[in-house]
Length: 453
Image (cartoon, rainbow, N blue to C red):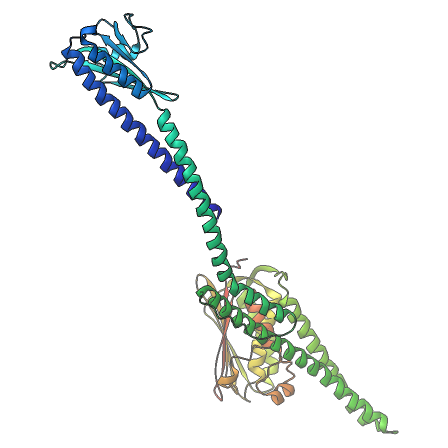
């Protein structure tokens, strides 16, 4: 509305100003033409203004009355031969603009003063000689009156237009906002706990797109909520399982009044294993919580990746040797990257340990390191059991296990790959999985050489 009003006012003022300028120009052109006609008659009468030639005097007086102004006729000696006011008649005039026109320096001169216009016209003979001049002062009151009338009419039209524009804007806004009101009502119902997809029938494409995008967001939120509930359920189950096992073992010992020492040692050993398992689950959960924090800072420093991987492999080789698993490390070049050594050590350690845990007896693990000008790449490949294709998209989820029985046998918590993925993403990197059941699994990690905040 404000923009429309400003545009209309500006347009009306411009139109009115242009119209008044045109009217002034037309009137001054008419004055010049009539003065030229009178000038020709004055030349014919040889500047004689006596009573015998009174018809010329009458014409000049009538024209001055029509213009509501004053006319001066001046000869080449600058003598005022005719003054319709009779104030300066027979006197002489020394006026800069008049002198310039008389000398031929200017064809004519027009000057606007308040509500009057002054026009100086030369009286030129057929030989193009200036024999005198006429000075006509013309009233512009009629144009001012017309200007006021036009202004009043335009104000009325402007007011009517604004009222109509306001009415149209109100109706259009009501129609346009109806979809917003419906969306608002449905979102209010959602806030009250009625979770359902938005359905807004609207002819406006923007509302349809907004509804679709909101529904996509709602689907993601529901998936996230289901994931959260599943995560809580899994955490509860994983934490409860060792406690249940310990309680069963303890109850079994209590029910036997004189249990042998060997049974006590066996049961206590099992309880220690369950406590270690519980401790590992809690430590992994705390690690995930720390990584999930947005404000969690990385202790970035230049680290020799070759040395880091060699140290990890040195620690894992004794475990691999027990199952006759051959561990091979291949480095194509010396690599130094800006990383958080603790977090990436944990990530690479989880990948290499999994490659050993889920490998076959007498299998092999191949670890390679390479880099280009921007990234370094770590590949961990094993000849183990592999991962089914329908499970590959879920292996990075928390507590997800492909083979739950085997995971428990190997002491896994189901959090290792989630921790690994989180650590890689914190470094602005990426991790990919390639696997075929029975043929083994390959994890490829890409990390920027220089950490960018």
